[in-house]
Image 1 (cartoon, rainbow, N blue to C red):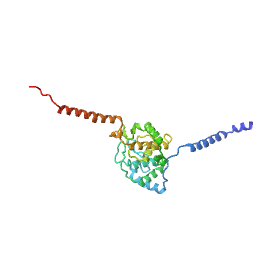
Image 2 (cartoon, rainbow, N blue to C red):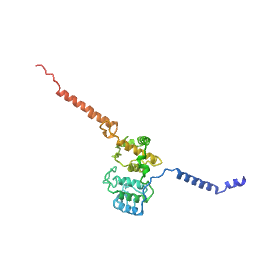
Image 3 (cartoon, rainbow, N blue to C red):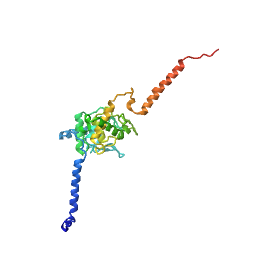
Image 4 (tube, rainbow, N blue to C red):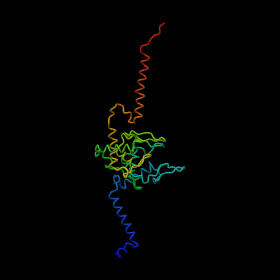
Length: 275
């Protein structure tokens, strides 16, 4: 017992216990940590081609080394792209938001200026600068795997985390300072997943630790399901909610009744005064 106690008080005993703890913690994290988004492997040729495209079309705002350009007032003319990952580039360039046509509070979606191959090369170059979120794989976007229960759960997650900005059916909405939450109608599953992963503009980042890839897939499946539903009441009003529905009711419904009442009053039977 004395020999064992002496070994426990050895100066290196604490270091050994610390190293053992780090090894155990690292092994547990590797085994149970959520898997990162997967992407197509990029070659050195892709990275070089992306760098050339970047220097021509992006460096004027983001700098030759993608570290950003500061204005004289201390702001960013173009933010640093180091560490944003391939997913951010694929979203911004693939939806046409970048490059911007003009300075504005928010970059609107438009027709892409780069084709799919060029977008992939730009993403490969930016991803080579520092680790960052990769382009989402099928575990985020394979909506065929989502069951009815999955879609129902995705709806609950969407209403809890997204409706404050995007509306309950993804129709979008206005925000302060000239910004807005864009409509999700017609947006591809990949780009919706990338937006959740990277948090473009004022949108918060929903990492895989917060919302798992499966839950992201369920949210996207819910959005697509809602958008495919017909307007059983006739005019959907853009799906913008009860305020807009009430406006339609008052302007068209009540307004129509008022106009009809005025017409009846003007063209109905009139009582002539007796001479």
